[in-house]
Length: 192
Figure (cartoon, rainbow, N blue to C red):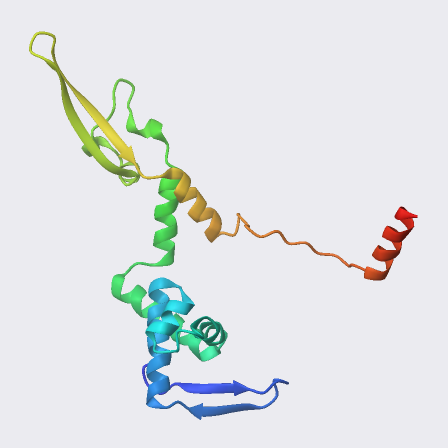
């Protein structure tokens, strides 16, 4: 679909006149490279530089490119292509994060002891990053084996899920009307 001709759409300031131009081979290559690099890093500036745009203006160029419908379509196309190739979907990633985020350490134990990895259910086992068995003690007192699990970071998984679903907002949004004349008059009246 998009691996053929890419058309540049230029909107006039008033949004009425739309002109379609066929891209030059160099522009087409830059657009494709930008979109391919963008799905790797999600960093517009770096993607623009790797696509051959000027380093000095790469941030502005990336910003402009990312607002263009044809670039957004290319990005979607390459993301879908990657999803098909890897057979990994966004839903799969979110489900795996949810396993980590909502895992319960009590599932590592039965009534008597810490369970061995092969005794764990699949969901609990997927939350384990490593397992160690250590032998401690000496000949006189006897040896005992000590099992130790290391789990993936639950807090990080919760944070990533929260950001994905827009639960956490790092920006404070203030809305309302402000009348500068009334504000200055109020300040003046308070000082008098």
